[in-house]
Image (cartoon, helix red, strand yellow):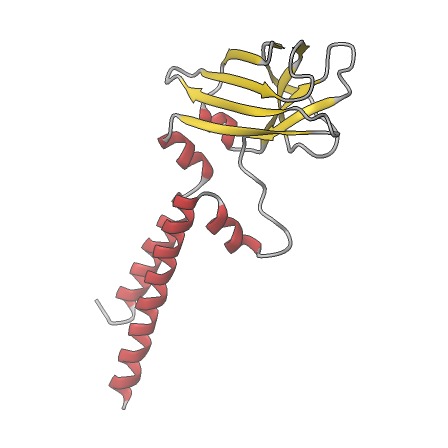
Length: 188
C-alpha cells in the first residue's frame, strides 16, 4: 500500500467511527436516562424524571415534583420538540402526577425517545392545561445553527461522546502531521 493510501484509509475509518457516536447509540447502550424538570412561568415547581428502558419495547417513566403547588393532580405528557414555544401534539400521554409523583409504562424504547428532541411538560391542572408549570428535555438536542457549530454540538452531547470525539480528532490530526513531516523529510 502506498504511503498516501494508508493514512487516508485510517482517516476514513476514524471519521466513520466518529459518526457512530450519537445520542441514539448512547441511549441504546444505556438503560436509563435522567431528566431535570425546570420551573416554568415562575411556578416554583421543579422536579426530576427517570426513564428506564424495560428491554421489551417499553419504558417506565417516573416523575417526582418538588416546590410550589407540587401537591394535587397535574396532567403530564411527552411531546416532540423543545420546552420553549408552543406545545405540540402529545406523543406519549403519562399518568397524572398525584401528590408529586407519577409512574407510567409507555410503548417506546430509549432510542425512540432520544432520536429526535422530546420533552416532558407538567400542567398546573386539568382546568388550566394552558399553564405549564415544569418542563424537561429528554431527546437529542438539535445541532446549533450559530455559535460553535457542528463540531461543538458533536463534542458537547455527553461527556463520554466528547471524550471519544477528542481522542479520534487528535488521532487524525497526529497521523496527518506525521504524514506531512515524513513527506517533507523525504523530499529534502
